[in-house]
Amino acid sequence: MKKIINTKHAPAPIGPYNQAVLKGDTLYTSGQIAINPENGELIIDDIKAETEQVMQNMKAVLNEANMTFEDVVKTSIFISDMNNFSLINEVYASYFDSDTAPARETVEVANLPKFVNVEISMIAIK
Image (cartoon, rainbow, N blue to C red; front, side, top):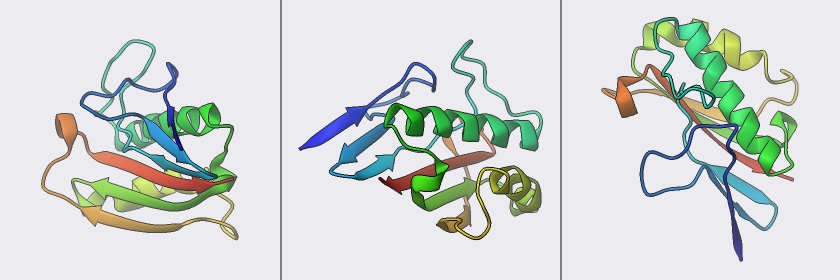
């Protein structure tokens, strides 16, 4: 049986989906973008601040499922401009121990929801 994971500490879904689904010991998160859940404002003027908000949103979803970044085994990063990769990676890397970092792909895409610059999803196993 699957369990739906939603928290008020991350942005509410903007479509027919949930923040995450827990199936057994595996958590599948939806992509997070840089919406501040406290005021609903979108952060897109500074790529590092945008990525930080995305990671904080993801942290809230993981916490709601009683997990942490240490439980993450796979991430997917979608970015609108590969020229931002190093700045995004700098923020992303601060959330993981380099020796136990998850598998990952980073893909440049034409557009993302609300025309943000970065969206990240994760799979975690407890």
